[in-house]
Image (tube, rainbow, N blue to C red):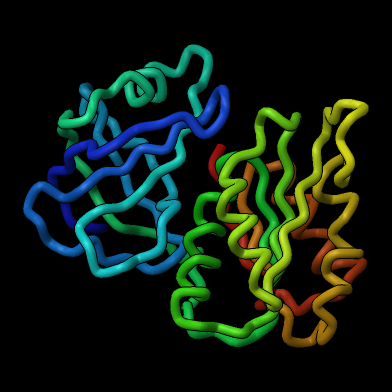
Length: 235
């Protein structure tokens, strides 16, 4: 169980029509220490906990970022979307075993849908902050062009020879020139870009159905060692 501490909302802005970036800072000023990929729990007004993956990389500071989807009928997600800077909440964490060491130089494929990209963003950003030259590929799936977020990161990462981002849309318009369909449809091709199937690490985060299908494909048809396939579900 992680530690309990108070946080204050430092900033909030829309990432897409249904997703907001919320940057919190610890009220005690202590560094927010966590491993890339971990999550933090926020306590609701009724004392329940809701878990959110940390979307930022650890940098020694007291702040951290979350990407929160507004869920229809979801009281707490709507409450978070309406929070004003300066609002305070109680947090517990960090927690979670879905992590990647920033200094890991093995080729890595990151597969995420929706806000499942949050812990993957933390992992990639943490690796790049160390100057890592590990080959990394991000396969990110959402429904429409409007649902794509963190584009500025993807453009920045594209300047690195070792990183490539592939976005696929399940409900793309006729004007979309990128990949179409679900992440499952493109896994084999993107994975092949990394080569070295015996050492490639795969990190998968999203809804249960997608995670299960990608995991089965990676371990089955693509014959990756079980210990090289890492998963996190959030529904």
